[in-house]
Length: 385
Ligand code: C2E
Ligand code: CA
Ligand code: CA
Image (cartoon, rainbow, N blue to C red; front, top):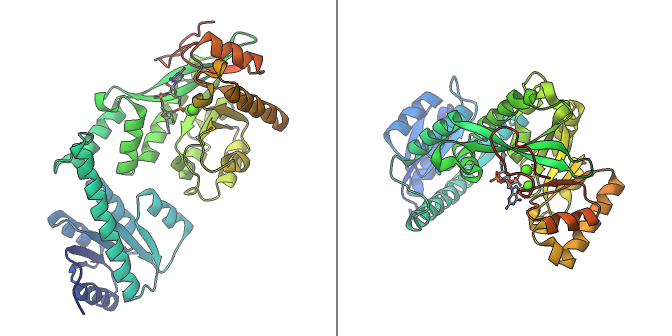
């Protein structure tokens, strides 16, 4: 057999015969194979070498495959990890996805399948590395060898310095604040912008940790505004998989009746198993649900129908300059009419000018958010009427 591959692969498996068979199959393709019998032994291999790909059983004695995957993610953002199990479960597959598994395979896995998946994983790994190099070239990302550690350290600092800005959503008719949207901020200078902070959380497998911090902050601030003022909290789609969100004793759950959870149309809900059921459970706890950024989703109205939101937020790309664009007016008007029929409240986001505001009022909108009224700020800024 011609050897086509080169590089190092780590194979973690308790069963001796399975381990040897896998090792032989991979070596025949040209891979340098290191083997480990349990998670701790695997960790020692990781200390010594870097790998093109890691293949591990989930059910290892003591230190399991999921813990291993997590440990790998803390050190290396790119290396693909393939997990195998003879006892698949929804829970382990969800956690595997959360920690960025490359493939979740159900045993028995044939040698041919093993060789194929490792070959594919290593190629995608190379592609990820090339993309990083390209980004470095473009000056967007600095990837010194310490970079992953550095990213983790910056993330930890940013989490310590995390706070949430609040921006009012006004009810124009009665000149009242309908609610405040919490927006992620950090005093760590490189993560001041929520996009960067969230991206780092995704790379480090810490989306849940970040979501929990934000929700705790919002709950802590809740007592500073009247009980009838709603608190809007943004969710990452992965947050829907976090059981902490549905924990009835969490700080935010205790004020659930005041909270609107925003789920964006921008990201797909494909990675969320049973999204409609999960959302239903949240509603049962008293949370209201909003679809955020309506008008940007690529997947038609799936989120709309599966979430049955209480509130819909129209994306600012449809609001900007609406006073001068009849086409936008007609879309935004129709959206309002539909939401009225469906019994949903509608918020227009990103209102910057009096002309945009007046156009929206003319189209029947009442709930408005944007720089015209107040920018997101520390505390709870009072809107300008
Ligand atoms: P988003 O949820 O659509 O939030 C609205 C964004 O529009 C905010 O940007 C806000 O500062 C900005 N904005 C508000 N009014 C205006 C306006 O009149 N004109 C313009 N040009 N912009 C306006 P920000 O704070 O930078 O947040 C960006 C995005 O980051 C958010 O978009 C949301 O998707 C995400 N994000 C923010 N906080 C969180 C969070 O706690 N959790 C999660 N998962 N995502 C968050
Ligand atoms: Ca939002
Ligand atoms: Ca939005």
